[in-house]
Amino acid sequence: MEMIGSYVNGNTIVSIYDDGTKARYFKDGETLCPEFPESMDLKITNCCDLGCPMCAESSTPDGPHADLNNPILDTIHPYTELAIGGGNPLEHPDLILFLERMKEKKVICNITVNQVHFMDKTSLLQGLVKGRLIYGLGVSVPYMCRPGLIDKLSEFPNAVVHTIAGYTPMDTFSDLAYHDINLLVLGYKQKGRGVYAQASKKRTQALENYLFAGNKFDAFKAIGFDNLAVKQLGVQRHMSKQMYDKLYMGDDGEFTMYVDLVNGTYSKSSTHPPRIIDGSSIDELFEKVKGEKDHGRIPVFF
Image (cartoon, rainbow, N blue to C red; front, side, top):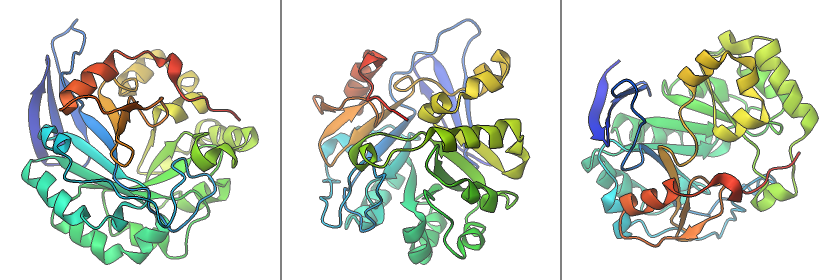
């Protein structure tokens, strides 16, 4: 495990390692007070040719691209973890130039693509990893695994398979198990086309039972949950308070934020009501995000 970088953020020292590990150091008894986001979700395009029925962004084949020369991007701090998505971010014509610019700034870029695009663009993605233009690779698998997917994933040590609680079929989890795979379970968003293609309580409960009652955590290299999945799957009730507090990475907007460059908006996360970008720096936007209350979260129903 190699340290990529370390930096001071408010009253905290943050260290980032090449396997995705993050460590925070601060004085006992202090409340963490970050001055800028440790990580950001960045939407750079609404273009995608797949038309997935649960797509929270309602992406289309002729969806618009964001302006990646937006000056606010130059205010991102070194060693910020940037999760780049869309749409299909590989469709953006300025993606490579943008990644090169972020590398010069020592920003840690990660990208998320659908398994279809992952299989079709494996060579391109291998080049991005080899050139350290990206560190982490998210591969979205909302349906059954595409033939050959698991073998291809083995070529990307830092790949993380993204699944959706209550929507991804249970057979997919069984297919992925015991292949040394990093698994991320995302909460289902009733947003965009996802309003019409809802997840089911039955499948959500089946996944909860599979992971916790079935104790399948040794079936994967690592398992993570976004905050929405933590709520939908009742993760907290399956752990001691001590363990939960140790593993929980913080509320939306505490260390993170979401920026939609296509629509020119930002918020705590993609499930919070967006607001028009009203500042000249990421620090300004983050300060406003931290002050927002959670009562405005976009509702999610099952």
